[in-house]
Amino acid sequence: MTDGANRGPRQGDDQPVLTNRQGHPVYDNQNQRTVGARGPATLENYQFLEKISHFDRERIPERVVHARGTTTFGFFEAYGALGDEPVSRYTRAKLFQEKGKRTDVAVRFSTVIGGRDSSEAARDPRGFAVKFYTEDGNWDLVGNNLAVFFIRDAIKFPDVIHSLKPDPVTFRQEPNRIFDFMSQTPESMHMLINLFSPRGIPADYRHMQGFGVNTYKWANEAGETHLVKYHWMPRQGVRSMTAADAAAVQAHELGHATKDLHEAINRGEYPEWELLVQTMTDDEHPELDFDPLDDTKTWPEDRFPPRPVGRLVLDATVRNNFAENEQIAFGTGVLVDGLDFSDDKMLVGRTFSYSDTQRYRVGPNYLQLPVNQARNADIRTNQRDGQMTFYVDGEGESPHVNYEPSISGGLREARYPTTDEQGPVISGRLTRKRIPRTNDYQQAGERYLLMEQWERDDLVENFVTLLSECDRPIQERMVWHFLLVEDDLGVRVGTGLGINPGDVAHLEPLAGQELTEQDRERL
Ligand code: HEM
Image (cartoon, rainbow, N blue to C red; front, side):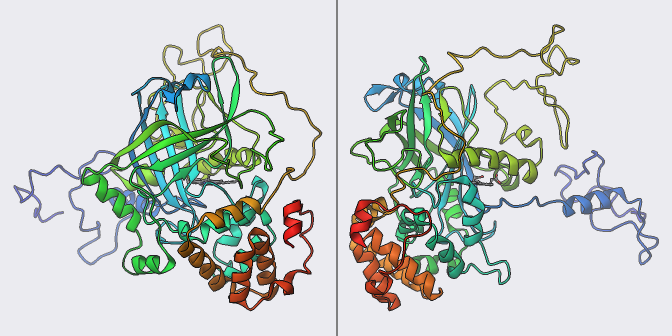
């Protein structure tokens, strides 16, 4: 400014002064620097260039899945026990051991398919991702609200997601593409029965369950392992919406679930979930009619009762959505001592995929961001440099030794807490095979029979509505699967589409598909 208009006292002088990122005061935030009031702009205008070029970079790629979500914070409080047994019998993980011990958490709830501004009332699985900031480093439990998944081998993940995402030409979510894929994927039936029932549209994030879905392991002091599955049960109860309820909600609000969660926390009504864990001895369990490493299956609760191990309370919202929700990064490989992977074929693929996408989406130093940092543990690595490095972890007394081993100082390896070998010995030929005991229909049928009548009616109506948009061979194959799930479901969906069970009885099983004895009797 040359006319002196911003000199002398002004209204708002008690507010802090605006600066640029170099710490220089901004004298004029309204006008570019130009040659005369109407003349050309000058290029040396650092403040303007910094402002506009930072704005040009304000977005990072949204998550390829789970783009729409919200993050809140709180704590996990351990019961010090697993049901009425000492938890130490199963795991040595420190966060569970002491009754009343609290661990800070960040929790991100999400939908899966829509973009980051899409409707939260969509029929879609919901993500339920929890980051525990433990003293042993971070533990992420990255789950969903439906307990199972569409597929059981990570190699199929891009395909299932492509089928559910918008058509690459019309950019519309097309039922024909979804059911084309699902009709060729019998293991998806259990998930579909859940997704197209009212459970497929939770009323909001506070009233839904969460599940780890994949099978993990716990390891105790002696190095003995158990297979485990995690369940989050909301103290608020479970509520869902029908398609009509959801349509009414999204007619006036796309972010109702985020709004509900934020408003509840701001009112001091902190939502709470109990964490329950199912355990199984770490072996193949030949007595079961499914594989315990198959994420399209749940474990029968009468034989493997979920037992409580702690509770989760959410009491704070993000201070900034971009910093703490857009940039938060979860992964299934993020485990602490006493928790382990299983050989679940989805889990290994997921574990690669999360940190891979985060190095691309957020950047190679995404773990230096406050929301991702293992803030309650000591972090000392020899990882250096890269885009956006803003501190050197573990620099300490030996700033010159950023390698290991060394006799000049620097970092050394930790000692194993017990032993590096735990769990059963595994041997086998390298191969590409489906797991045995696929049993794709039984649990889907049991789930259907457990539903109340109105839920079954809603499920049938949802299937008929969407399948009506599909090609005839896709409709016929889906009715064939539904007859194998449960006669009543197949007959009702078939009737809605004008297909008699007899019309599809001639269909052969899919290539490589294994039917159980019970399946064959149904056909
Ligand atoms: C997010 C991959 C299966 C739950 C993501 C992201 C990727 C991904 C790439 C985006 C992460 C990011 O940008 O930060 C995969 C692959 C899977 C798989 C390859 C199968 C092989 C599953 C399953 C579940 C699940 C079975 C549920 C148990 C989630 C959740 C998020 C997520 C909750 C969102 C995390 C957040 O809120 O930031 N997944 N996923 N995923 N996935 Fe998966």
